Length: 618
Ligand code: M6R
Image (cartoon, rainbow, N blue to C red; front, side, top):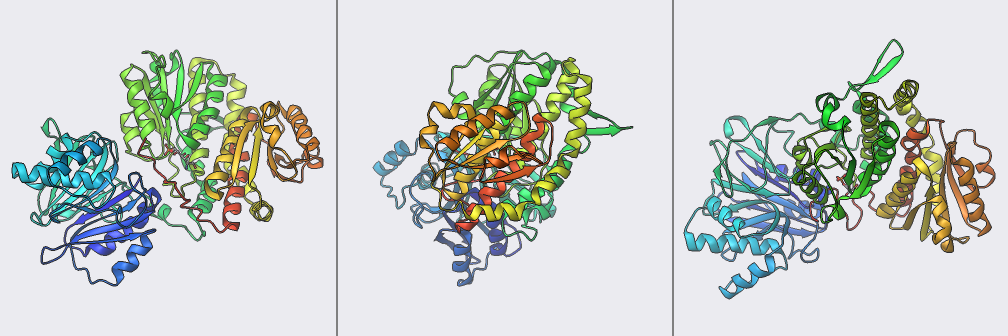
């Protein structure tokens, strides 16, 4: 969580930092701050509570002239969202400034040790402890900033991505990472350097990027090659990657919010996701996934699959389980990464663990991958962010290629993940001989038509918007689905609660009678996902149970449905499709519904309270 951006070079730093912070604001937005080294080598710090725009307003009143600086947008962990707790934090002498993303777990012990040595603290943060520790180490050992950072970090337990500057070493910008991402952009002839939590603030300036690895400290000095040292083993070789980001994906493209743009992006980005993987020749389709070709042995002979992920990616995992079991006949489990990482679960060599993550930086998923790897599992990643930590930790995998997702509520990543899971299950099923030839062709041909069918769902945006107006009063929602649509019910409920702050529960429809039905009354909207598939008649019975308790039903149904229309207050139709692909269509109206409810309530859709896009703390 938290976003870091820093620059050292020959350009004026303020516009670079502010533009960068805006791109990283999805990572946290409760306060923002920056530190600059002025031309007369004075360290200047500015902070503002709330959004980056507040900091920007503050800076507009100053006359900052600097070519070295760093900035931070915060998602509070230690200490509430106040100006005092905002980063950067200064050391006691005021010479060193530090920005930090992550958590120093042993900060309380370190703080009391520093207090005994005369250090005082202004904030409640673990970050201030780290900057004081760096200063203390420097005062004892008389080393430069980079060495002092390295020595201090050796004493820290936890996760960090940091940037530090010291007004006594004005030629140095020091960065380090462990379990929190940090990218370094390298300008022409090493005359300028950029640092950021992801590549988006850097991509407009240079394509040459180095991703720091865990426990590495980088020293950036104008005109010199980047030096990277591992905390324990010393100087390391590193790879400079050429990163080509589609920058047009980073703006709203005329939509009022990123979330709406990303919902509407789905037809196009799912085509990107399938490009070169779903192939058609003479009316016959086939899947080619290089990861499956290359690791046929490990994947096709797997004893068991376990999918690990969080939030929306976990919901995609529930659909993945059904796909893999149906097409590959391999027993598959789905675990919350946060539970899996600390569990005593049995994972053995010969098993496959699939990590699903949009950001590729989710701390729990990353730790689950590391744990499974240590137990000998083969790790397959389904990730969006190219070069992210999870992508780099896996043995192989398939990127979903849906472009950057900025809205905190995940939308296009969910459909991208299901698309890749479908391709994976079919590719593997074909290899194992467990998928019926006719069904293989039928599913792939239909998958090819899904983007156009999503376009048809999107045409109902106005209708869903009107429907949303009547939902703003509701305090509780129930979302019910069965079979392939059960994870969609969970996802619909998650979308609503995270951006509209209305409590919502997703449930398997038949399970409702074992408890949640007690909540149903005329006040409670109940959203059913009831497409024309194998459990259709069963779900109609579940609707009758709700109607008997005066519940108000809203339903997502297959085009032309008449039965549900007679039971529900309102229906949204989606084109007919195969049961296993239904989630790709049925989730779209639910994404739009939560979006419009949140807009009607005048809430901040792209940056809902208390959340951040990339959850890099556990
Ligand atoms: O980046 P990841 O896919 O690993 O993120 C997992 C969850 O944090 C994420 O899906 C979260 O639940 C979203 N805010 C849901 O919209």
